[in-house]
Length: 174
Image 1 (cartoon, rainbow, N blue to C red):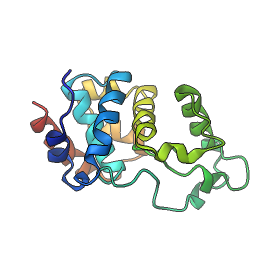
Image 2: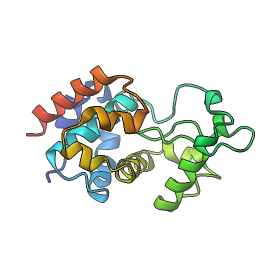
Image 3: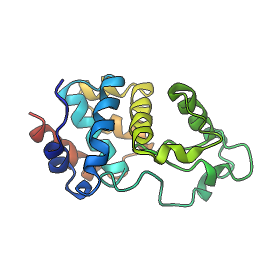
Image 4: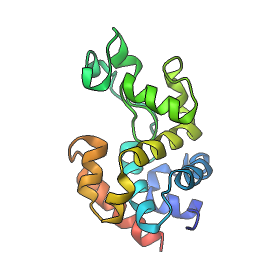
């Protein structure tokens, strides 16, 4: 696996230009740590990260998180959990249960400090953790971008942009 260069990252995500340098080293480290080590995996991962973070511009969900209030499927069992544990990181880890699991895996107290996922290194590592724990390397290897998207998003929201980013990444990472 070759590390992604700054020029490649900006070519894939031109709107990330102002933040690309901040994320370059942590992104490459997270890809190594979580086995995102082939061109196909990298292209898939970066396309999904590109869509979910609006090309590295957001590491916290723009919505308030109120919509997640009381969602048992996310482990939001306490009043305020929806807002407190709204999507953060480059793939938008969401909900008390996911924050707890991610924090345990990354050795971070995310239940006490959910905002740690807004730091570039943790935003990247949480994305890698999410990717690995959802079996997304296998789906990327199979070229199944729709199933990758469904596992990340629950549906196919933003599919056209995700596919456009994927095609660009495939061209750039050659």
